[in-house]
Image (cartoon, rainbow, N blue to C red):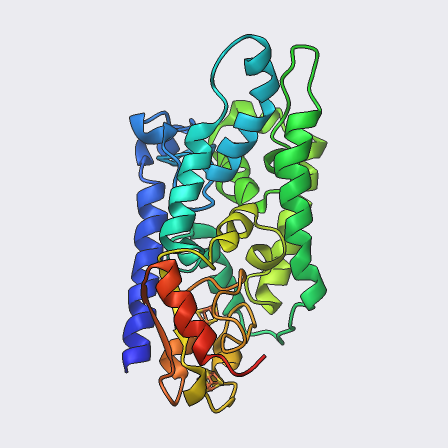
Length: 300
Ligand code: SF4
Ligand code: SF4
């Protein structure tokens, strides 16, 4: 019963965030990209800036924009070096690590819904989960910074070539709503639509494949899982290694091996099913939490 309550609560958070992050319905109805005053604020989730209804900025897009204009800004003596984006990501990470992935991200919710389609399910090979580090470092950080045009400006490579959330929330919606945009679609849109279809098929058979193998925001927030105020704890002396937690985990990890895993999206499903109630969550100072985990952990 408690597990159901937590899951209902999580679903309500996810739906409220999806609606709240995309609340400019008037722009959406007009087929224009929203320009509300909150548009400059980084949202704590992957939510495409170009979605017609988006009421805030996607931190991954904002990070690429900051890096792609960094050289131009420095060369022209401007002091805009993306500190706001870095600070926003730092605050999110320090507060909750990947908590927003499990409780707020609209694209995470979307993947969970697609996974409910009754089809045979397959696990994601662990090696593929390391791909996200390559995507973050190459498409989000290095390419936007290194490759620039004659004026010194780069491109948001991840948004342009990869992001299926952008294709779904922005590309397809804008194409449907705005005839002028529809007429300009070319092979890049075809490529991104094909990629989105591949992800949709993958989402139907595997749990959260985008979050686990690609998402740059989840990767950045995952670095903070070890140090964030919101943490998971496991009293390992009470753990009977029954793997009930592993069987419900959407990212297929064994939390008793590493409660600070950078893959954990803090969904709390494991906590709800643990027969010995040795899993808990809460806000702790990093030193306090680390001490407990070190003394409690006995399984590797
Ligand atoms: S469900 Fe609880 S007791 Fe079972 S393996 Fe996971 S942490 Fe240990
Ligand atoms: S370890 Fe627990 S809290 Fe983390 S993702 Fe898996 S089920 Fe959710």
